Length: 194
Image 1 (cartoon, helix red, strand yellow):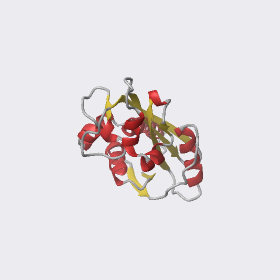
Image 2 (cartoon, rainbow, N blue to C red):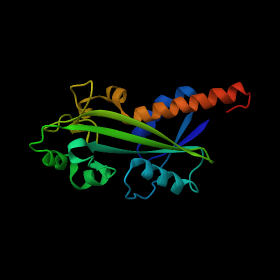
Image 3 (cartoon, one colour):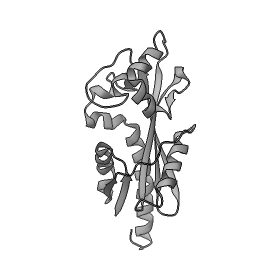
Image 4 (cartoon, rainbow, N blue to C red):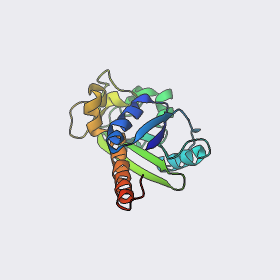
């Protein structure tokens, strides 16, 4: 079954293919970029994007929105992560945290899946801490300053496979995968095909 992923990021597509390909899903990348809106939650952003894309995208489709939330900054940059990264970069976040001892943070990803009738949301989250200086040359965004729980390395110090074990996007994909698999098995059981 074809499943359209609305993203301009080929690495996100590869991650989705690894998770959903074994279930029989053919992931088709569509470089359709919804406008960025200001909202209080990632769920609001993802829902708006899915509704905006509805008349343009082939169905079923999904898209993903993510954010970097720093507890001592009251969740900033959160839903504004992409904008803050473009304007301040991760060094701006480190400057805001100078002298701050509690450096808990989390990456959150929200996937909005649209089957042509209903939009469903899937969440993935990874907890961790913000470093005092950037480390590692891989990755993008805030990866050089984030160490996930269970590791001593930043996302930027990890290869793709290692990062995938912690990935917030991977966890959201896993939740969607579980739901799709249940739907697939239910449909097969009823003899309706998929």
